[in-house]
Length: 418
Image 1 (cartoon, rainbow, N blue to C red):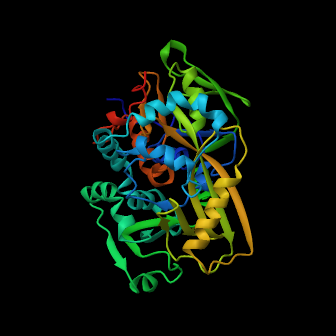
Image 2 (spheres, helix red, strand yellow):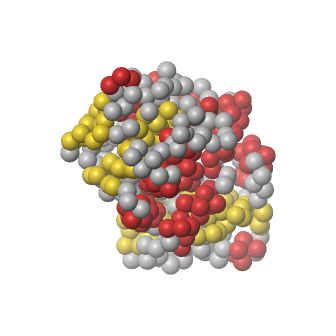
């Protein structure tokens, strides 16, 4: 086992999102010298644009049994939150074949078990990350509620809820007039709410990550704004990274830059089946008439979260790569569904956003060392980046510093696609 580091061990963390910054903080706590490198300021990417929920219950992948049969109808429906830029389909097909191969009971349970290990204690992990940094106020305890049209719509997701129950998440079912007592903002289209206790949310995800990054600098960490171009792997172990601002010598590297990790993995000899899943949000700035807690609106598969800036409605899945601009249809659907769920919603202004979730073909992140290279991966978190960021950072920091966790990480092995 490798000894815990002295302050002379230098670790470079590539990526200044929630995973990268969390990793950097845990590494500093272990005594390592740490430099975070990103082409953008901390919290400006996908870590900014998410729904803000610490979704401990979110361990069940999209690729459940029956998805292959249902997918064509989903794509053709103007009211279902799945979109595809058809010109991108030829590029998507190799990944899509691998992705859909997991749409069966055995693989769904395997993936749910793997994801569950890093999300089910999310609120506790965020509080542990922030506790001695003076940032505890960023984490808000709350229910996480799922709103359905009726009992039939809830029953249609029985398979998913059964897996959630097996993981210890049993909802309180609210019906009739009790729905408006629980959440007055909900409209008449909602006939059942499944509410889960012991969750939480962040009212400004981008601001949260930026605050964590400032705390990291206050711990003696360094942040460099640059794009990483290559690795120096002299003797089979990383010696340095090459950036647009020059060479940075290091003993270890953590790759935590989301979907942009894929081209860097190619430079390390691994072609990871990772696709950019385009996600959207609309912020109803200064909104009134919205919910008081995060709510998943099941009909539109989006989450409405009350945030510092207003009501953020985030969700929708679109496949179309990294280069294309935003599409109109996903944003129109979000607006339509939000106003149906919350008929008294009013806002002075609306802000649109498009970001890219890193989606591995098996819906499991890559967490671990690549061979004996001293390059560690911490990316591919799909829909659970904010939720699982602090725990992932803690796990990776342990691997880097020779203090591996008492937990089986084989499901996340970065070379599983080799």
